[in-house]
Image 1 (cartoon, helix red, strand yellow):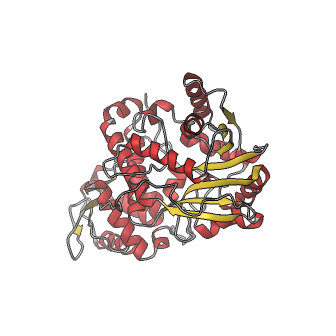
Image 2: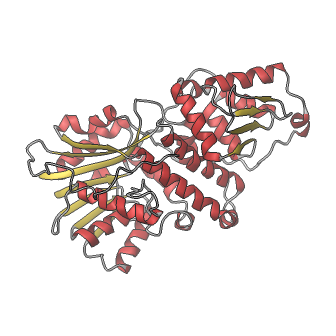
Length: 425
């Protein structure tokens, strides 16, 4: 089976062979210098189609090659979209350790001015599409309804598509995802008999984990039809259908009262314009002595989303800063009980996904075309690099109503005893 490229184009290489053979001129080399300067001059060699290069002053970790003049112009005109699309089409190649090259690029860019590489030819910064009720359903469908068989090839056996939690450096992806689910459950102090509402449940793994291991009843909401269908099927197969209810509906329509509110990996799809409404939902449904947790990709500071990622992979996505997240909590006087940043855990998670993705490349090529596969490699490797470079964060925020004093005095309930865990990439 073949799918279209991210924007409908089928051509993978330039059709103008003479352009590819033509020597790069002074203007081409000047444009390349502008691109490298906008990237913060990372320790990467940049090459043009005729073999001419622009090398860093010190050691180079790899090479990025522009295969034709038109690609150079596209990247100048719209850097993020131009580069992402050109890589997907095979017009840009990355040599060397894929993640390492991207990591050094993101690190240099973040140390310089991230917005420099975001502005298009007219100086405009990208804006995510709005997540209205209809818009959210369309955006979620475009990403999550690609087919369960696609995600099954490279996710863990429980189909968890959010940041894992590595309690040990030799933990497998399956072990780390299970540890993450326990970590979330402990943070909201789940106990048998409690009721939980989950906003954005993916393929249902966390909802079923909460019911199975903590004896709670869960009502989980999601607007991806394929994910909900899969989750219901798994709940029946696991004998959990009496403890977990999967609802195909938007988070804005949640009703009832619950002892805990859980949202893992959904806030990125909500958009800042809707944070107040999300806060109102939580205030309406969370019991006064309940705890809530929101787990989300984020930023150190307010910043436009990556234009290519938002347009080609995650339509409507927006990773917020902690200040922006407070729009959920402050209007309803929620108390922030705990904030944890798991960005390096997400870097490891994404590298594990990319490794599995690459190991299944032959299967993927039978299902999808080469531009689609290259786009997803760039997405997985680029996101790993973004977390490694500290340009992207993963926040877990635990909160409650201010009168709630049924909270632990220490973090002892969250962690196992052991040495400090340090991972060096």
